[in-house]
Length: 204
Image (cartoon, rainbow, N blue to C red; front, side):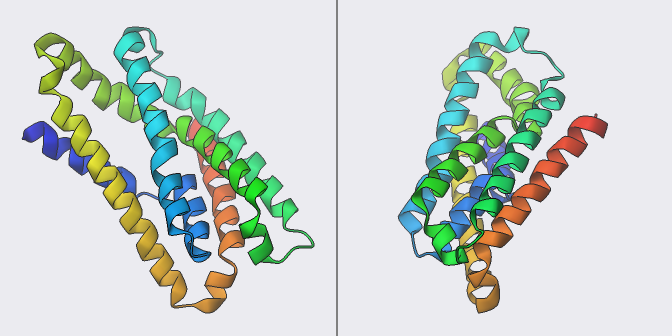
């Protein structure tokens, strides 16, 4: 029960913190595309966590401890590049046309997924929390630590969907903000990218 609550608590915190995928899902909600928004919130993180689970399980002792600092540069450049591309793509188009662009949506999900993979917080979590718990599972049996990861998944996805719903509800109260939601999301992506680079340059 302790591991279940710990995993759920950390998952809820992670799901409530806005990420690039949250912002892209929010733009889809503004277009009334809830199924696509939920898919964006669930499928890329599930694939990323699956890959990091395997990497941590098999290569934990060889992963550099300072990797969160190093990958922050990659995440920052990825976000800045995509956000700049998305903003340039809006020239000559309405915000609604830009948000509805399928090619831009697929590009944004790809870029956001790469940024999620290289987010400092992602690697801090896997190296300092999930890694030791997996090591505990190796010592006492992996069935022992399944509640931690199950709680994390339920907490994260529940909180992520709730947070996007709350943001969309707030946007619906202000039609002007809703109209410019796509532009706002990409400006926020720029800010997130800058924050990654700042953390990589001056963070510990």
